[in-house]
Picture 1 (cartoon, rainbow, N blue to C red):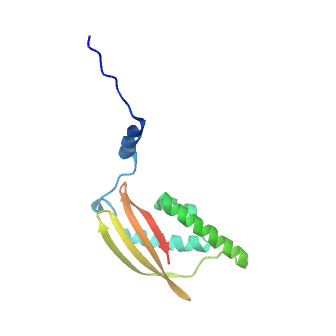
Picture 2: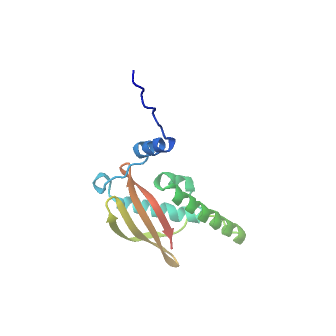
Picture 3: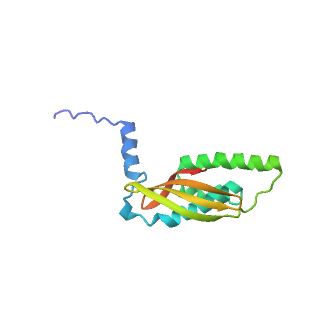
Amino acid sequence: MPARPALRTDARTSFIDDDEFFGPQASRRAELPDPSSMLQSLTHCVVEVMAGARDLEQLARWVTDDVYRSLSMRVVLANRSRRVKGVAPQRPVFRLGRVISTEPADGVVEAVVLVHQPHRVRAVAIRLEGFDQRWRASAITVL
């Protein structure tokens, strides 16, 4: 009976293959819903989170882990600043303005949403990427 070659298994390649198969799958633009409502809702929530009127946990399903960590650090700094000034968190007064968006690649949307507040106008830059037939924010910057 001929000797069978030994099977080599490499744990690293096994995990890579599993991640590629079971991990988040990129979606094409045709498989995704219209991003405009997502951009407006996400901007509204981010402004409220920064003001301390909404819990950051509510955004967890809409953003990537990196964005969540970044927003978490900004929330901590905003809370600390309010505490030092003796200001209580309150629901901000604002309205969403113009949404300017582009699609630089299939399944990717980059947008700027204007936020009009009583004494200033801010811009929220958001990058959405399609994964598993839904949008997730892979970058958010409040300017």
